[in-house]
Image 1 (cartoon, rainbow, N blue to C red):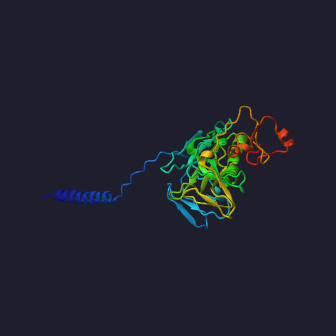
Image 2: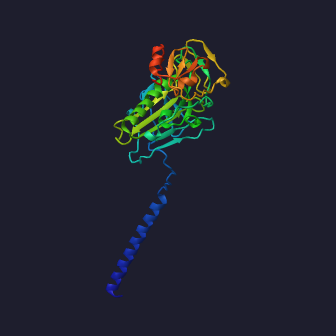
Length: 331
């Protein structure tokens, strides 16, 4: 055989063997590689979901919602800071005003409520009645030592002043007066005042946190982020506890008792009165406490009907009569 032909055959045989080795390695690598199927995800929020844990605190696990959230144990502070008080926000999200409320779960409980809030979303009319709504865990219970007497309020997740949404059951939870007034209201006022003063938009989310099958939330997680100034004006992430000083609460049912053996009175849920203010009312008076309120104030709807009086006139006239402004609605 020709020597040159032998050399060519040897080279071809070498190349063929090398090709077979490469192909074999590729097939082996492909068969051993894990196939990852991307999860189906439809973004509804500009926020990044994350687990937040209060440092150096024992915690209870909320297994009713996903992802798992660690519900902090109440230690005497109405509000605690989460994630170094920074809202986890996707800055690439387009600015577009919207409201989103979760459907009630099988126990009738609210889920997260979120919004991109601008001036046009703010309430422009007086708030109507919400006494017909009975959120999960609701009980009409009065304690004499609570301002306004009633233990529970119907707490808006996205405040009426921020959304104009009043009687949507997906936006109302059973919350203590302490949660409503000391926890949520100051934060809601911060957001409202920021939007009014700047005209900017705020992404805002409130998530009620339940443990297992409890009907009453242990509290609410609140996040806010001002968009146009990249969080310079507003950027907070906190947890507000659904507690009431002096009252022990059964979160599974919503039942309660006075911790210090202080007497309470219980009304039938059927005794709730639905109050609709007359046209032209300027303020609503509490003739018992001698305080006056805006028509939209939650205290108006918690007030005993026998103590409630409508007033058509000026603020100065009421001050002259010895009435004092409500510290809740600041009329």
